Image (cartoon, rainbow, N blue to C red; front, side):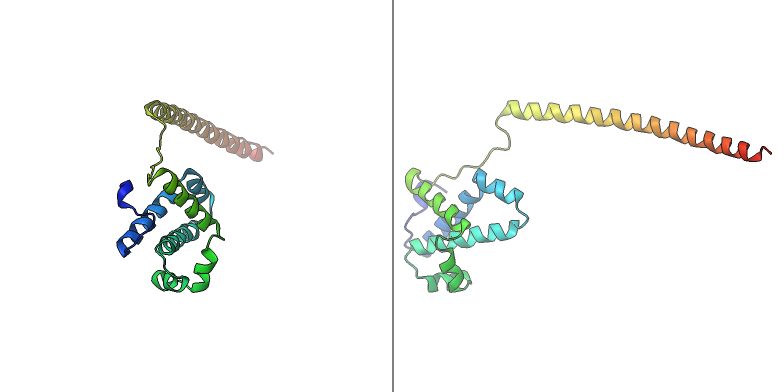
Length: 165
């Protein structure tokens, strides 16, 4: 979405949906939010709260009442009123909106790697770990064979000792 196509004060249903979508995506892709989602045991609840908060915020910016927002989002009016800046999700969405207002609507996708050097370093590390794993598996196999021989020898000794009068 380009900066000009996302209205910060939507006047139409399409404008509401554009702002809502931009708020959801930009908030979800914030590094602090991604970290909280990764660490959370209630990921779906956290994501749902962000989506409802973004939807409510976009509709409020369009001038809809809490009752209209609740009906539009299929939530209770009490939940919508509760979201009015009091929840963590609402605060995160509001911060994202302020960022949009100050710097324009720019949604940054976090990079998986900081650059080609980090990707190369990660691949090298993976290769090293695969090699160590292979070596460990080979040593384990040798030790298991030695253990099997030791057990067999112990069994033979026990049988021999038990047959001695």
